[in-house]
Length: 102
Image (cartoon, rainbow, N blue to C red):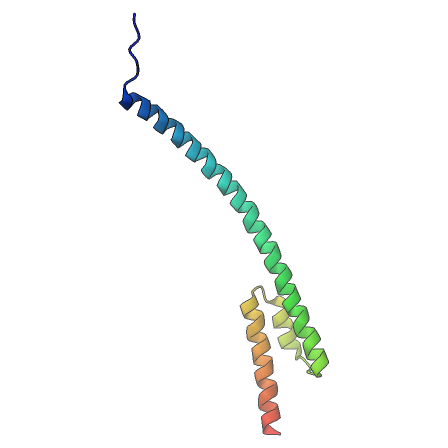
């Protein structure tokens, strides 16, 4: 039997199948790397969150601002920068209102 050479259509199908395998492999590798990236990103976020909290304690101490226990606890428990800033802003707002009354 003489083997017929592959037609252009058959060649393209083989290339397409190979390309699909490569795409699947790359997607798998990307997904694995994304998990690591997400973990690194989360760790860095936690470091920043800790720095911001420490900065609030330091600034309040330097300014002679007593932080009420409830606000301190809310800041300690906060898991997002937005929550920390919200508590800090409430604290500043209450101190400004007390100062304005006096």
